[in-house]
Length: 124
Ligand SMILES: [Zn+2]
Image (cartoon, rainbow, N blue to C red; front, side, top):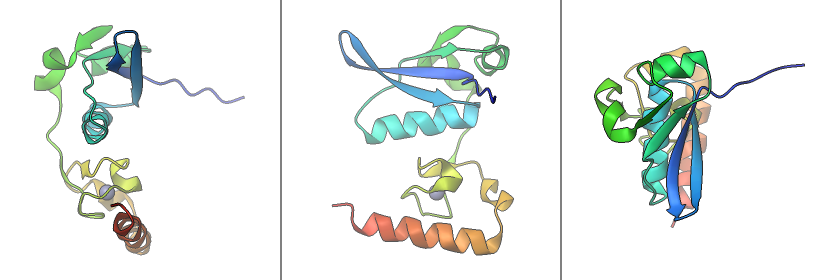
C-alpha cells in the first residue's frame, strides 16, 4: 500500500461557504498553484500544513495567509519548455524555477513542448 501525503493545501474562496483547494509539495508548487488559481480567476488566500514537511514549507507554521508567506516564496520565470502555455515541467502553471527543466532529457522536452504548443492552439 502506498501513502501519499499532501504537504500543503491552499484555499481559494469561491463563495462564502466554499473553497477551491490547491495542493502543493514545495514552495515552488505553491507559487505555481497561485498562478493556476489566477488563471482561473481565483485567489489563494490561506495555506494549511498537512505534515511536518508542510510546517517547514510554511515557515514553521500550521497555517499562514498568502500575504504572510510571500517573502519566503521563490520567484519563478516563464517556462522555457512551453513558453508559458503550461506543460508537465511547470506543473501546467506556465512558470518554473530557472533551469528546472534540465531534469528532463532533450527528446522528452521536444515532445513536451510540441504537445504544449499543440494544445495551446485550441484554446480560444
Ligand atoms: Zn511549461
